[in-house]
Amino acid sequence: MQLLNIGYGNTVMVERVVAVINTGSAPARKLKELAKNSQRLIDVTEGRRTRSIIVTDSNHVILSSVQPDTIGQRLAALQGGYHLAEYRDGAKEEES
Image: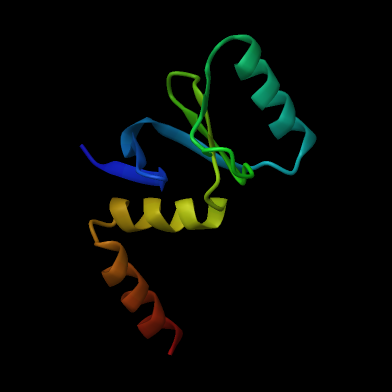
C-alpha cells in the first residue's frame, strides 16, 4: 500500500486514484458540484485555492491545493518505485 501526499499532511492510497484534473474547465466545476450535492466531496485545501481535483475509484472527489503536475510527478515517482528525490535526479540526468 502506497500513500500519495496531496498536501498539508493528507494522503490518499495510490491504487484508489483514477484521475487528477485541473480545476479550470466547466466539466471540472460541474464534477465538483455534483460530488458536493451527493456528499462525496472531500476538501483538503485548508481554506486555500483549489488547484487540482482527484477522482477515486469509489467516486469520491478530493479537492487539493497542490498543482496537478506536482501530483502527477509524485504518482509517477511512487509507481516507479523511486523516492521523489531519486525521481527528480533521474529526470535531470535524462535532460542532459
